[in-house]
Amino acid sequence: MHRPVTPKLPFLLGLLIAVGPVSTDMYLPAFPALAQDLHNQAAPQYSLAAYFLGLAFGQMTHGTLSDRLGRRGPLLAGLVLYILASLGCVLSWNAASLVVFRFLTALGASAAIVIPRAVVRDLADGPAAAKLMSKLMLAMGLAPICAPMLGAVCIMFVGWRFIFVLSTLYGVLALVLAWMYLPDTLPLERRSRLGMVAVLVRYVDIFCERAFLTHAIITGCVAACLFAYLGGSPQIFEGIFHWSSTGYALLFGVNSIAYIGYSQLNPILVNRFGIAPVISTMVVWQLLCAILLVGVAVFARGGLPLAGGLLLCEAAFGLLFPCCMVGALSRHQAHAGSAAALLGTVQYIGGAVAGLGVGVLADGTAKPMALVMLGCAAFATLAATRRPRLSFRPAE
Image (cartoon, rainbow, N blue to C red; front, side, top):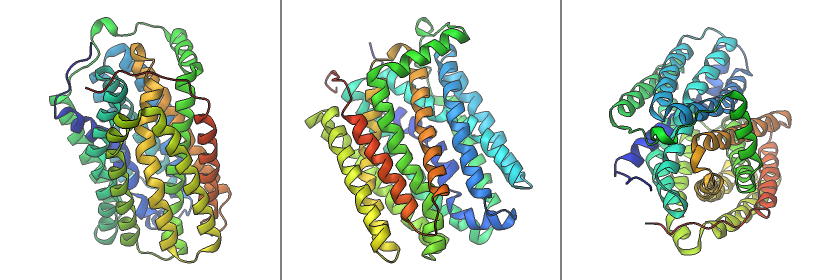
């Protein structure tokens, strides 16, 4: 039996998941200023890589803890760590200290990313879960729109450190609201009592289950495309095309609005056609968009054609994430926290690999970003052909 979903719960869960984009998107426009202030041109990339690494490790930890201790306790503890580590970023004195604090920030933020997904699985399944996941994306969608603009304003008037002050305040807000309004959706009788070895065996079992593995690979590839865009676009638009930090923030905001719009089509398309056809169609769309991006990167001049290609890619991001998350978690209600954690780990490992690929292939053009996105889109398309057939209850 699934518990009823209160109208405010999707927005609270969306606010919690938005801790992730707040922690990354707001400081993307600050990359040039941050590198100059810390006297290390690679500091922004190192700090972003450390953040992704922390997310990959933290998700599995918090997922296991939430299956064992319930959803509230691990979430609140993670938010406290996030707040303290964000304060550390404000006080960082060199690139190494920033990297360490960003890693710790990600460990805390992981709880706010993975546990709301497990709450969704506690409450709903199939199309109903996809609909709820889309509501989460609507609620959290303001963060990628507003965060880069706030970051650009901070750079112009008070400096990049104030960006992490705002992150700290957002963490405090999330902590207070979660403490006051988030119920524990995992009852005592469903909580895990497994030891460490059994937990590791569970992760292996989840990972080897075909529905989880194929949908997780697609999710990881979609995330890799997204993170290649996140990691490569500041240098491309601000460095190569000489856009201002405000111009880049506006571009990011437009793409985020498109992402929200596409994600809100998800319930309509899923109810009409089903989850599997939406995934099959959108992986092909993502592949075609990536091919277009490569062509634009090779032949076009100026930033607007590339910005247009990235805008088209947002359709795949907005529609594939909710459907693939539901597909991956569909057979793991008994340990949704662990499954959501492992899914998040795959997702952020994909992001780390994509970021590394963009860095290694960097040649002063947009081609490395486009090529990495094409490779990830092709692999996602291949994984989509190996999915098992899933059956879901109709949405309520």
